[in-house]
Length: 604
Image (tube, rainbow, N blue to C red; front, side, top):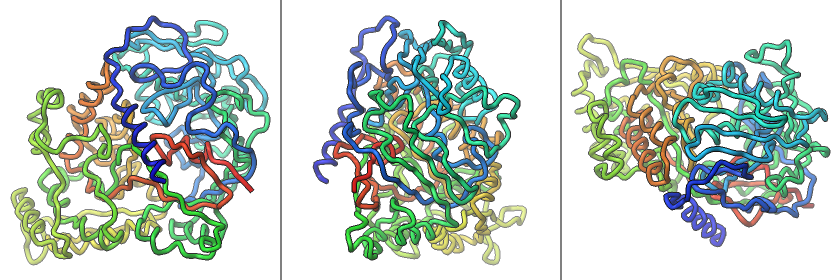
């Protein structure tokens, strides 16, 4: 296992820190792949992705357990809850991502990609052999219809990039060119990752409405059976058109991929112990050490694997909704963070083993420095100094408690800050000058037992400030609807972040999300500086500029005190059937879509 960790970390360092400043400007010409900076790591004649086993056998099944349910089979719109696997196993994109490189795409539906030096346009040439699962050809008409439909009435994650398209035109029998109206080097890659749907299937239907009609895709799997809210099964298509492409060799090995749905995560784990599902990713380190002594483990039928990664920590914790007046003052948000007794909570729930998230991009070269901003980072932030909260430029680190349950020192600091913000305790209740109590609602998803344990401890700390929030535990459907509508004061929030952040950051914390429902800007942050940093990231001509802009964004988000972070893990802990195997060579991203279940296989 140490060898695997060394390989992953060395590869990450070599790839992420590679600077493209020495790259010679290339003339536009069709290529097999495209990278955000420099050239793709794999040559045109590569055999397979480095983390795939081209000799992996076909067969077997992988059964996942999910908490919650689904009521739609259209994952490309805001309405409804669709199963995760539809967009992964059934539908394809023009280009395929390598999760061994920060942001590199190789041809999938497209046999080639072409762009100019400034990335002001991109052109894809469709493979002549590309077919939908019903045997019909994938056409340029399908491609163009998919781009326009997703960009205009699809989920907001597609509409943001489409707003930067000046025109789309067919340039040949199997080619399409997209020209941009904005300087944004990431757009050429984003267009390569748009789902391609069959236009004929949707004729006469309202694409924006939820449906239980399974999409006809060109991918390696088709929807086999499903019952809304209970399970969905994907069957490998033996006639899949693209099985011999280099990006697909050694992938899509399992005959069946199934997702079973349960009431909550605790029930899912019990289903795993009973053998109803055959793979489970454990997020609690203490549980990993103490609760994996059930019969299937002791007999060897279930094995425990530790899979390291070199990606950013992302952000996970309690998000504060700044649309509400009580959370609009940064001093209040800092007070909320001060009384969150991380050290005590981590010790109680994890035995103190997990590191805390220190910023949104921590655990990577993209993470902010915690001292004063310097160099290019300071230059990028300087024009927005008046907007930024204290600590953004000067330097900010999360408060550290004393490890005791009472956490007296941080509690005193929190009281001083919240009083400075205009609140005071009156008969044991925190109130403002108008006599209104400081109150808000914490909304949690039913069955999220670890989150509920965190909140239970936090509530006791808040009471010492005279705050008694309402805790509402709702089912997964209500949780989805309430968070889409930003109908909460606090909620549990997780955003996984990659080594190639770009335009999707506007969906996460862009200004449109303050009022537009369905975005991932749950905190309601409204910041010109954030949008400027994202623009600098996607417009960066080299890796150094990109890293500086991302570090600056990380500072704005972290010092903004919008989320009270908990912990992350530098590795995935995965218990699975002994028949399920994965390659010895691990990608930079580790246990991540593209690795699981794509390159796993079944061995009797």
